[in-house]
Amino acid sequence: MAGTANHDYHILEPDIWPLVGSISALTFTSGMVLSWHPDILGPIAGATVLWAGLAGLIATFFMWFRNIVIEAQRGDHTPVVQLHMRYGMILFIASEVMFFVGWFWSFFDFALFPTPLVYDAAADSTTSLFGEAGAIAAFIPKGMEVLDPFALPLLNTLILLCSGTTVTWAHHSLIHGDRVGLKQGLWATIALGILFSCIQAYEYAVAPFGFGGNTYSSAFYMATGFHGFHVAVGTIFLGVCLYRAYLGHFTPRQHFGFEAAAWYWHFVDVVWLFLFVAVYVWGGWGAEFH
Figure 1 (cartoon, helix red, strand yellow):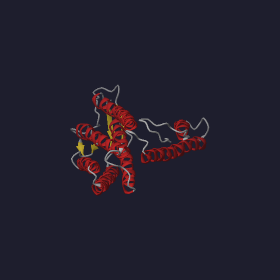
Figure 2 (cartoon, rainbow, N blue to C red):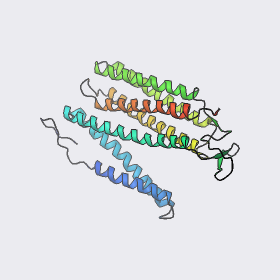
Figure 3 (cartoon, rainbow, N blue to C red):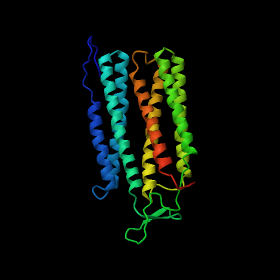
Figure 4 (cartoon, rainbow, N blue to C red):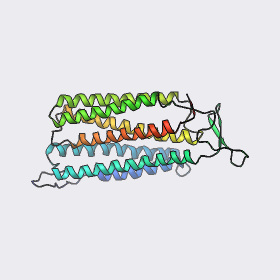
């Protein structure tokens, strides 16, 4: 945690949580590998290592972020420190962009260079036709229905666009000292985020195809599912900001915690726009709608 000092930087006191976080991350990833290969130590050992690592990561999130909030309220986040924290958030969002680039890459690779397949609607699975005469490659097998992009996906697009407006409203209210507008904007954004998640869960429940079976369904669920996870994380992020707003935190000149949450939420909005156009509209073009 930071110590008080009359200069642009501040000296960090020894803190155990960065070390705990590093060990927990290694434990968590090791647990995933052991869970995928139960023949090494057994299924119980793999699950134990996995959950121990996850518990350590969650504890690190709570305690390390708590220390950062204490630093901010104590005045240790000088303009130089805030600038460096902004650089860190920009790099984090850049890493998230590359994460989604991987999913978009796989989606377009499957779509532009598909494997010849035959779709079995009863079994919701596909069979490869490599080597058979007259086989025609198709990203979406004939007979498979996809979700209508201008139904629930379009509604969710409008919801996220509105949430981007409400979080901007909250930000501008904070800058101008309107704490009532800050809270109202955050409440509206959180409500829209929860509504988006509920609609996406319903969309998954009524989808005419499952996760496996063919490359289209796998790429669809991985891309949209990870985006849904990011919406949930962003909603929690904004919920913490709302709680801090009620505690009297944030000032017009120092509110990096809220600013980071707003950046993250706008990133989630932009990714969804690409998903809507590429996965729902372009990806399902020419297929039968459910």
